[in-house]
Each structure stands twice: as C-alpha cells, then as structure tokens.
Length: 269
Length: 269
Image (cartoon, rainbow over all chains, first blue to last red; front, side):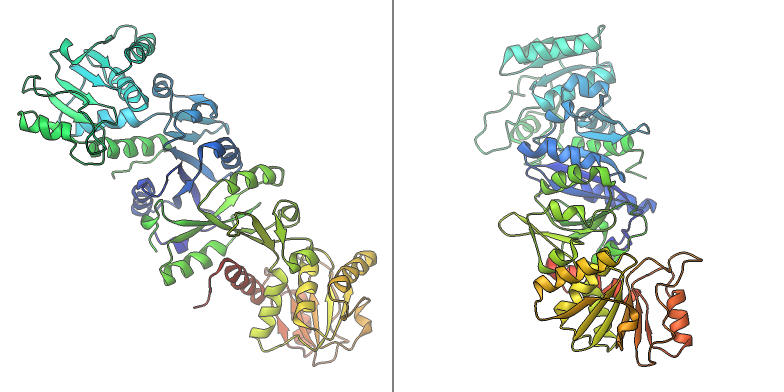
C-alpha cells in the first residue's frame, strides 16, 4: 500500500538489529500486507546491543505493536526478555520473532531452523526419516538442529570446531526429543542423505571449507545456510563433485514465511 | 511511496499519543516523503501516559529515528524528557515535536501556536501589529499566546476561567518578551482585531460559548482552535453577527507544516 495510507489505526511490526541497513524483511512483509489489503506496516529499527533492554521496554509500551522480528546481535539476549518461549527457541537458545499474545504477554520463538526445513521441503527434499549431518552448533546450527528434530529426521550427527559445544547441543535436543537418534560426531560417521553447513565459513574470501563434500556419496544433498555469497565455495565444490546443492536463500525465504505465520499471516498468498 | 520500499535504510518518524486512532499526521508526512522521493516513513504509536518515560527511553535507542510528533496526553510531560527546549516550548510549557540533533541530543519545541499564526497568515490575517484577545490559558492557549507574541502582536489580552492562570501566562510571556503589551483581562477590554478561542468549549453539544462574539465590532476576526466540529457554535454565532471567522483546521495544517520544517522538510512543496 501507499505509505500515505498509514494512520493511527495501522498495526505495527518492526525488525531490530545492528547493523540494520541490509535487512529485506520489511519489504517482504509490506508487499504481503499490501497484497492482502491489511492495514499494517513493518519498519526496521537500528538498535545497538547495549541498548536492547531499554529498547525492548519501550517497544512493549506501544499498544499497536503486534510483533517484532529479531536479527543479530539480539537473538540470544532476547530469550531473557520475552515472557515465554516456543519449543524451537528453547532448543536453540535464541529467538528471531516475538508476538504479543491476547493476554498482553510476549512469546518468542525461533524460525531460522524452520526456514531451513521449509526451504528443503520446497525443493523436494523432505528431511523426515533421513540421515542428516550438521556442521556448526552455534546460533544458526542450534536452530537448524531443533527444526530438523521437530521435522522427524531419522538420525542427526552434529559436528563443531568445539566438540563440547556439539555435545551440549545434542544433549539439549535429546532432552526435548528423547526418542531421536542424535549425537555429536564427524562427517565420517555417515552415510548421510543431507549435509548442512551452519557455520559462517564461506562468507569471506579465503575461509576454509566448513567440511569437504568430495567423499560424500553423490546422492547426498549439500546445503549451506550462508546467503552471501549466494553460492559458497562449499557449494561450488559440492556441485563439481556431482552433488545436488541448496544455497542459503531458500532458508532465508522460509524464515520470513514461518515468522509471518507466527504473526498470523500467510506471506505467500 | 509503496510500503514495500521500506527497508533497513529508511529513516523513521513517529507520532505518539493516547488515543492515537484519529491522527492524520502520518498521512500528511508520508504523502510528502513520497512526493519528494525521501526514503522515510512516519508511523503512529499508541502509548499510555503511564508508559511515556519507558517508551521515550526506548525510542531514543532507535538510531534511525530522526523525529517524533507528540500529541495528547504527552505534550507537557515530554518537556521534562527532552534535552533542550525551543522558545515556544518554554513559553507554552509543552512540546508537540522533538528532533534528534547532530550531537545526538533531543530538542523539543511547540508548534501548535505557530500553526495558529501560520493559519491566520494563510487566510490574509497578519497578526503582527494587531490587538488580540485570547480565551484560554491552558496548553493550547499558552502555545497560541507564545506564537502571537513571537509574531509581534501590538496588544494581547488573555482571559481564562481561572484568572490566576491567565495572569501567570501573561507573566511567562512578559518574561520572554519584555516589550510586549500583554495582560490578563476580559473580552470587555477591547477593541480587538482578532479574538481567539483556545478552550475546549464547543467540542461537545451543550457546551457554553467560550465568549460571546455578538458585542465585538464587525471588523473583528473570530478564530477557533477546535477541529471537531469544523464550525463550532462560537463560529456559527460570530458569522451570524457579521464577523469573519476562521475554523481550527487552518491551525492544524499549520502545525504539521511547522513541525515538518523543524524536521528539515517542506510539507507543501
């Protein structure tokens, strides 16, 4: 819709982060609000880490604010500021969205991993019942692991440069999904149907590969969560060695779709 | 512009108040931003009086927020929250706009009265050098009195149902404009070129008239600051007794123009 239609009856959404200039989430949401003729708008607020709690206390006073999207560096500290957490947030220890419930309290949840699973499904790669390898047990890795567990993977092996961090993630997930075959390990513990990079390795020129895809069977799908570059060196090599690949853009779109659903909207209709 | 163009580089403005559903200020600003192709948007935040300070602390953390418009009931308490006050704010004891200065501090000022003076000028009624009567020494009256003083009126008589409040306003204005012929008094202390109602009398059916315009010379312009109804009973009677009149809408438009100028924009080009 035209910004000139914004008035005192317009419902508000925001995304907070630092830096904020690169975010495209408001565009996705606002185009959807326009298509559906919903009197709502999403803006982006540039908020530094040191200001998060003060900002959040202020945001909560805004009675016509219905939801916020959270990006770096606020995803982990926001878990301590909302009133309740969804299951994926509890596993990931981070949130990327919060909504105001009808009782006035705020519920946070994490859709980064859900976006990854959604991206896999859109490309025809149902993760349920498959054997998966995940490199990285940090924020993104934790979110992806939680969503894969929720999706019903058959087996999940998590590796991290910090082996204890991988073991702790496996423990956290096992506590929530007691029946799941999950453990820390290495890419040598295959075979795997899907191998996912959830580390930042590949964002900068000269980064080492997060893992070597060459020895994987040709049937293994190689997935990266990195958005820029669109096709990382890992994916370039995986493609060269005969693997199907999936770049991070699919996950990014899936995150926005899942967060919109959390707010009560279908981003794609 | 289309809301779909809002992204992380969009500069932000907001209006805060309670209630907020009736405000039209975002529409005026956003149409102007669109015309000028400025990547900025104004939204409206519904904020209760008890939440003002918490909200303001939060708003200040938003690095891409450049200015806020303030409406009821926050105009007076906001004077204690900004870092510095313009001259009209000091006279009125209230602000209706605040902007972030280049040093990061926030400056507040009051444009309600400036809007009234601007509205008079647009209709060809220059207040400078004229004799004016003002009914009401509350928030709106104080703002109008300050702007009339700044505009260079020849004489200003202020009346209020609380005579001491009128006297205190005259004292405040005299302290800032020592040469001005200003005093508390009554509508009987004329003749006046312009007579202005700045009380809420006339907003509701059955309100008493703020003053009786009948005895005023036919040359006296009768002005009301009330926006709804557009033509108040005072103005109906004034017109019937042969006076030119000016409804509150002119002042309202002038307020937005003046606040936009304070933020660095020309609302009318």
